[in-house]
Length: 120
Image 1 (cartoon, rainbow, N blue to C red):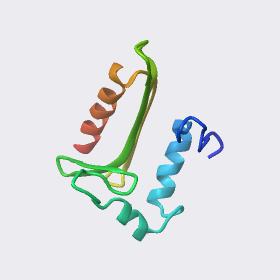
Image 2 (image 1 turned 180 degrees about the horizontal axis):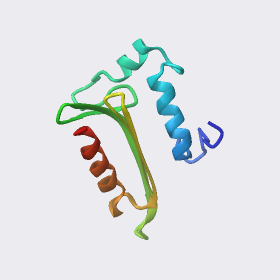
Image 3 (image 1 turned 120 degrees about the horizontal axis):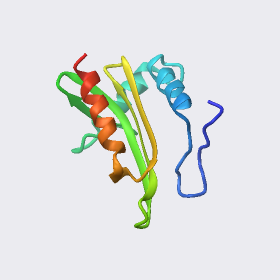
């Protein structure tokens, strides 16, 4: 992952590319970064909300999905970013990166893809 910057001074945000996020998701699934036991704990519901340790958890139909969304919008200018990385049934990785305010379509594209792949 040569195109990812962590710990930026803007409060913990990071910058990455779709290629690096895909490498990250593949390494998670193949237990190259952490053990299966730790990954399973991270994917286990930790509170009343649908969150594990660092992951948002969910289901679409019978498909189990975990991942995380991010986004930042600057003032009322409509500028910002939307992002998301989700893993579906340990088979698919969905990565959505945009340079638009999250309210301008990134989540809609992500949800469309998640719904489509969860039916395969």
